[in-house]
Length: 568
Image (tube, rainbow, N blue to C red):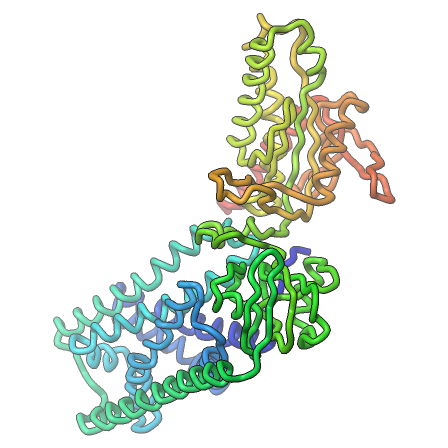
């Protein structure tokens, strides 16, 4: 089963996320309805009638306003409890957008639902467009943009913790731009047509509109009154902490600081400008703020179920806690487990592979046979020339077929498939690469015929499954960035399969798991063998491939079948 990110946060965070998702779905349907204005007012109204059947039903109304109330209250509560406003820029921008929303949204709600409830007004699109155009066009457009940006920022910083997100991110980004653009131009185009045709009609009297405006103004004052209370609570807690009891936090290899009780360790680090990684923004999901508590851990708050889930997922050892989840009440000695001499650039922080991603991929090892014998009696120039031509052909073929070169080790190459695409598609790319490599090695042998005593031969091992992807080693601060690599049992098995091609006299050994996931019958591709792999109790079934013809034919048949299904 494909696993999700490290954790889903506390109950409070899960409620904020769930309520936010409900609001995003509502906004999306509303915006798509606006976009229908490019067609006609009648189509817009038909869309609204359909939307009303869902969101104006009793369950829909309860769900929508419960989500709105929950999201707002929890956001204000979290802001009031913050220990510091030294937060990432994206969080500050999202917070600022959220504070702007009530100013525009309350008037919109009062003019629609308020008018319906208080005066039984028939709020159709003709009425709404007549009210908005042209006098309130700017306010309505700003509301649309602000709400959408606020929601998309939150959605992006939640989804980026999922391994599959990067593959679909360009598509989702295009949709995130297209939806509000179509909504803006859609409702404006419909409003302009309505005015041009002389079809404007407001289903409320001027007196009713005036009262609704007064109610909206009162609602805005109330909303910002609550914001003011939140700000007062924030500074009140800040003052209380300032004069309240303090604790000492000693960072191994760094500073020892005094901090007020009530703050999380992550907030203490940020407040004192101590670099402390937190990809998820302190929501207890990503585990990048993990910290080893060397002294004083027995006085910390108990581990919550949410934090325990994250720590279990990363196989954390004794004394490891999430800095965003602990609030020191006594002196601590700590060591952040993802240390940083200075803050990393945003591009590095937002690179999920820096912190590790678990996802299913295909791993391929390629090795030249008899390389040591090839080098005997040759000048260094000749060896390097032959090796460069060979490696260049292998790497180019891998990349051309959708693979990612993990590393080159002398005459060996390790490649990853399915990093940017779904697992099954990645495995099919890997199988196509085996066929292409067979052709490429023939081409290399022809090109180097005058330089070789015997043709070059290679062995290939391919296995797939759940792996850890991450950037291991160099952090890029010296101008050298570590590349992406894979870790786990899949890598070991793929390497073992490549080595076993010598024993089996095969061009490639591919696990039956790979072929089955790719939708192919293993017995049609090669001869079945059973291999014992270190660390496994049962033998691994593999297909030994000496001639890639059957594999090539199976790939063509699979593509043809997929093309027919797509056309149908």
